[in-house]
Image 1 (cartoon, rainbow, N blue to C red):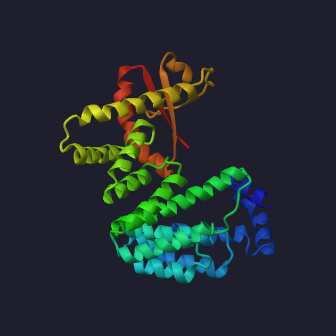
Image 2 (image 1 turned 135 degrees about the vertical axis):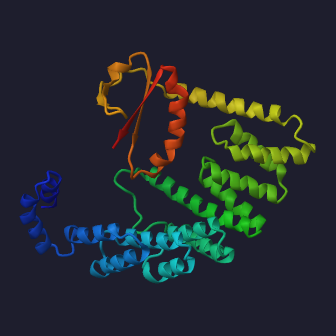
Image 3 (image 1 turned 180 degrees about the vertical axis):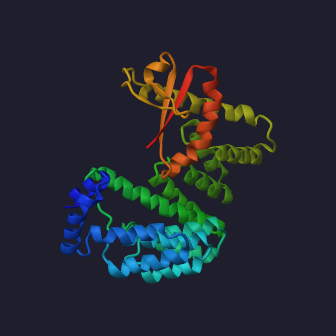
Length: 340
């Protein structure tokens, strides 16, 4: 029945969907069809008070509804955005039935970023770690049909690394340097040294306790590979100056690591390149003109798929704008953007 209703709805045939919708509501008064209007009402609420009212109405009517966790998460985030951390914590502790590591991690990280009560943030982060040790990261956490067992286990380790990263960052800000090193070392290990910001914080902790030898070794490794960041270059300069007494020779020293990283990245990209005919397609460009792949023979064509609901897509726009301005003017590169 749901498939029939969805099909008619997508076809904009509301009159044909209506009788089937009625049967669904009668047979399943607490099912997805019954929940959807109330959930959409919550989504449409514009401010915190309206979301609170609509969310509580949904949860009261559908205590085991499909969207309970989502609604509660949104309300907590609304409190956080408003800087009302006490209310966010109170709501989390009193309204969310099965608390997880990520519930506490969200609160702790937000307080860390906003320079809120550091002791309370540390307490919340510690609770997150405690639940993480028990593999309680998300509500109803289980392996999806699309994950292998090894992928599922890896996702658990990655989640634990995220929680430890938050805990370590807050420990460092609280001046508990040795404890921060321990937490961040484990976070780096669980993240397989692939998380740039976690690596940065670990190095900061090493420098904070005076372990510049290990900090330097880590930075040289990261900057020589594909995990290097701009901040790491500054961290390495800090270590270099402490050891040498000045910046003299630093540019030449760091250039060797940057060249190694460039060469490694280039080699990996060459391995990933394929030499196959691209499927032919046509679409409307930014000017509303219909274009096809054949129009750009002998050019490099970059097709970027994006959507207004996609946060990373929107974040990439400034970078894509820079790329268009840098490469398209030469006439050898064409960018096409597809709004999905």
